[in-house]
Length: 181
Image (cartoon, rainbow, N blue to C red):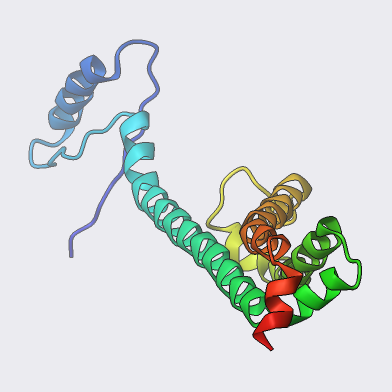
């Protein structure tokens, strides 16, 4: 049965120079004891955190892709809704709605699903925070600054995705919409 022994040595000098002396001291006690895998604390910590670092990078990539999908999804749905609602938008403008009114209506349409998603995500983040706590270093699962910054990011992404369809809606000619009927 193979047994493993870990020896930790604290030194004020260069760790690599002490490693040879420690190896020699171990061999003086028992010549058959192998001394392998000699690491400095920095190397040990680096090896230990490599897998966690990779996992975090992978999660960051997936998070970025999710953000991109969110942006494209909001833009696509709003763009489609604006195209389908051109008659309504044209009629609103014909009855006196200003471009700012139309712009506001379209942006609010884009922000409503975002608000629902933010609320659901906030509840899920609080509920599942304990699961993720072991994977994140230096940040609490209920870190207010992180949650607020993520909410602000999602609102900004939603606004950015809503602006193009909203601007397109403000360029509708009421006369052209009425003529299409």
